[in-house]
Image 1: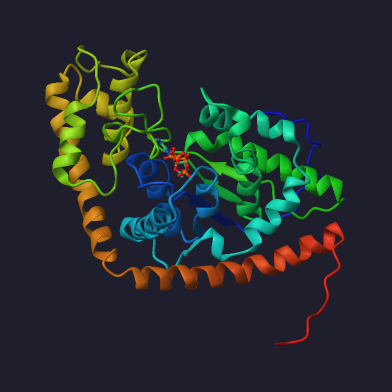
Image 2: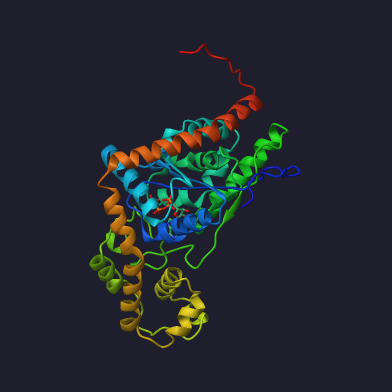
Length: 353
Ligand code: AQP
């Protein structure tokens, strides 16, 4: 996408730092796991500085029941830890505990252009069939807050699923426009990291729609809280076509549901989709689905069990999130101070107490 923002100045080198987030707007799905969480763990294990955030301010861009939101935030934190995020190595926190996110987002609201926001496909998708004028102002400004989440830490890389690519491009445009307008080389031009066999996991009921935690049909997704029987039943009932699996990837063209199940199998097993197709060439779904269910249960059940264990101690989860917020704030606060200085805000020293 080109927003018409001016080109970047000569880029300076920034310390590699990864930031990414997930909205606690429902329970985590297999899509969140394969498209984001599993890769967050891989990045942590590569030894790069990693900052992971439960973006609760994003979640309230659509209505959230307050008690459920708190529960979902703790559950998502448990999901991160159960999937392998180590709060001692990665910074794990919820967004609203670090005020810099909202403060920088306001500055970016004044840098970004309204037209850029209206062009976002996620905004169009989320308001499709509804009166867009009646959606929250926050839903329209969502990408500006997302840019703030990332740039508050001068993050250089953001692992995301395919659906977030356009928002990442907007983050780059905001960084470039800020740097240009204020004649500074302050924000990095962040790189999206979209890789792996399942960058876009599709609904189990409709292979043309993304698997989503807010889809009204629970059958459309696998939740990280689903038990083995539920996972197996959802895969058994997943929509497919009558043809067997093809011999090459080309044979998956125009077969979105079949392609989706092959991609899920590939991502869970650590193979490429081509390898999966070779292994199951000519197999009917009656053979493939039980194997996929077995694999999904083997990979997801340990995470679900650990999540359930962690959820028994919400005070410990809150402690971890609080500690993460303190560490995040220690990185963010001096960066935000520099931003306030760049844009011309008076910053007075306050008397202690
Ligand atoms: N189906 C998916 N396939 C691959 N990646 C996915 N992600 C989400 N769904 C899929 C990735 O998960 C990260 C966090 O996403 P999010 O929760 O912040 O927002 P989202 O993309 O809008 O996810 P949902 O489940 O669709 O949430 P709702 O329903 O609340 O809007 C991102 O990296 C995303 O790419």
